[in-house]
Image (cartoon, rainbow, N blue to C red; front, side, top):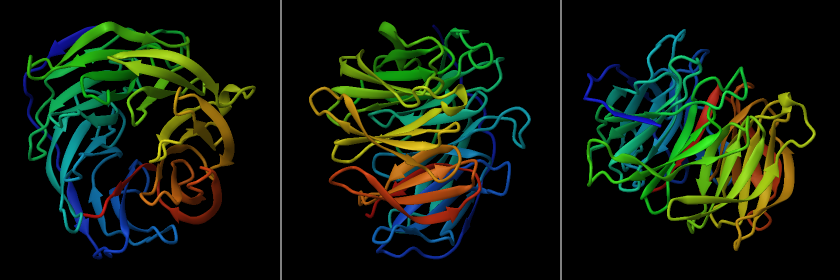
Length: 391
């Protein structure tokens, strides 16, 4: 493990916003992140009708920036943090992170500032439990320089400070095409906020840190004991999700299309189950991605991309966190990079990145099962979906 302190660097970049119609008080608002190599201009703010599942095609606002692929809301929904997944060969070759203020009445977004992520293709971010830091996962498609975890202080006003700490790790080198260097795909905090878990697709490990900014503001992360969780060779860990009670966790492994189930306590993950998403399918059918639990904690939803292009529905055993498959449903598109349950729990929205569409399907809150498709909205390369709650 290599951890180093970084002295503040100059902030760079600029973002513009363009406002449109005023949102109805009866609708939820939906934020859509995207990739901008095609026609998309950035982050879109849209109206969503929770009664019908319809998304209003006319944006309330378009916030222009390059590749705002992942959106992170502060707990109070007063700030939005966006990773600009830039890298070599793109219009903007420099990875960045942007912060926006959210108007509490209208949800209008306005830029606070933008800083460098100090890595290529930042693909994920999350806010620490105490809201003092943002953890940014620089994936880095290329072997050199490889992926890194970057730590950025966040002010009470939402302003991002330059990166103060970075961490990187040796890769597993199991897959010669995708694992010759680190590829940090996501980083999340434990429910109590005392630990941070960084999922490295290139290393086949979850790296574990203690988070204590009061003890050491300049280096808020220190290696925990044990410092990592070993996963199957060539599995490629992607996203980790904790249960609401903090006793269990689930992890998607992109390359092997599996979900690992863990017991959790005091910074330690103990694997108790392994679920196959694409048993018997060729490698092309395996590309596990997003996972989200229902608000009541009874059901887990997981997307598998590749040629499978499915959403899988699981019942969650409340005592063990173990999963029982209930349903496999086609996403009616290509590459479901992310999805989201709407605040009412009646619909599930799917961001089909490569077929340029957001698909809305009905959901039965009692059974967890997904029903008919109620809406398809054309959207160029959607990558993330986040709802803004009514104030």
